[in-house]
Amino acid sequence: MKMRIATLAVSAVLACGVAPDVSGQARPNAAPPAQNPGQQNFDNVQMQVLHVQGNVYMIVGAGGNTTVQAGDGGVLVVDTQYPQVSAKLLAAIRTISPKPIHYIINTHMHDDHIGGNEFLAKAGPTRPDRAPIEAGLGGNVGAQTTIIAHENVLNRMVVNGPEGKAPGLWPNETYFEDQTEVFFNGEAIQILHQPAAHTDGDSIVFFRRSDVIATGDVFTTTMYPFIDSARGGTINGIVDALNRIIDIAIPDHKVQEGGTMIIPGHGRLCDEQDVIEYRDMVTIIRDRIQYMIKKGMTLDQVKAAKPTLDFDPRYGTDSGFWTTSMFIETIYRDLSKKK
Image (tube, rainbow, N blue to C red):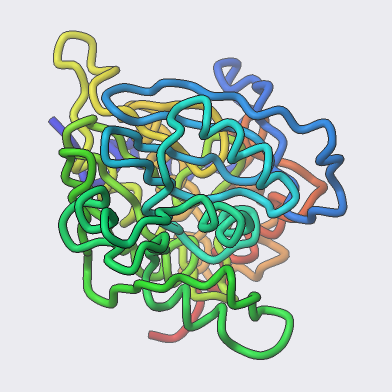
């Protein structure tokens, strides 16, 4: 039975100064992904293509993972990595299908998930007389690639200043309610808004026939969740998003693994059990910090108590754009806000 919250002993929630469990050894994917393109040698990037199941594929390159759905009607892409690898990403997509890219879905507005929008959109439909038929119901009547995202993504892209993005990257179709949907290649695709999670514009994408979920950065296997509080992210929103993924996913009942496959924003291909473990980790750390706040502990005292200690070998880091200290501080400030 799926649990909305982790089933945890009180001592496990509150214990903070314990030694790491030997089962939590560091894994090869423990380092956080670089968010600054200048830190990467894009010439050496190689795209890795994996058939997930059904009509859905996963492409790992530079930046966030890309999800591809392909069929007789054409190609749909979720997230487009950094702009510096757009040609390589398109070449990888072409190993899956030579057909036009009719849809791009952005899970949020960070550069490593939207950078290839403009380049890939040029690989869209070019025959206006055929576009409505090839694209499926309701799409691409003007023979151009439809870029879909929550309206908060567009709102943040169009502003002046360093946060603004070039118009070619902007979504040209947005939604503002809890969800929207696309029917493409004979498959219903749900795009589900996750408010105030990683950012305020996160979407997860559920391919119903293929039984695959693309999560964006509300779930990764490489690091503690990056809570972008400057763009509306919150710790409780992350937990809610993880619970929603768990609600949708259905494991193989024989082994409680497999079944619905889950493509994270960064890291390896997963199933529901991986998300449950990650959700439990996030919930434990959140509850520990909340307990310390209620005890009147300062931020420095909370950091000294090491509320993440038993998970640090797998998810923690003292360097890079998102350190363990920053993760703790963000949760502390989030939970300390007056409601």
